[in-house]
Length: 178
Image 1 (tube, rainbow, N blue to C red):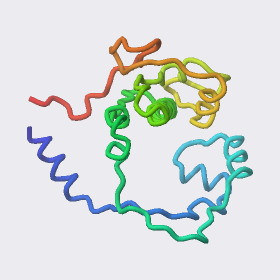
Image 2 (tube, rainbow, N blue to C red):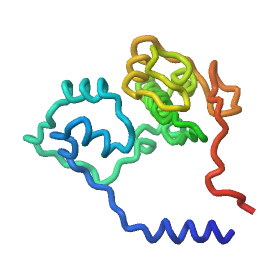
Image 3 (cartoon, rainbow, N blue to C red):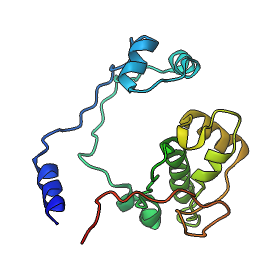
Image 4 (spheres, rainbow, N blue to C red):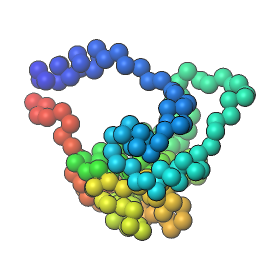
């Protein structure tokens, strides 16, 4: 119980605020980009991104809402959009993010008719050599694979939902809650 209270006090004391910086990597070399990303970024991915990046057109002005909650805007998909995944002790954020994003988009595009989870496990297990399962992978390649070849359904760990559920046990983020 004491550790939970300490965690709450710590979270409430943090004063960091998110901010958008349009040009953070605009003129960066591969080495600078990779060191800032804190992981080895495949040079071919950087070169492809660098070659295809687009400049943001700021010539128009529009009012951006102070906050936006997609669950409130797309109410027929609120449960789908609000389903936070736990990748467990596995560096599968690349697959979890792509599968979750496609799931949300399909739900929104179908006006809430499609609500099944798409399988992050499928992306981790299949592909063209750009996937490495729990050792990381390419979100870009996973996105391309999903668009070009498709993806099966699959729920969370131990859910027996869909064709290929997630195989990794969730993390125990907060320790013993007793």
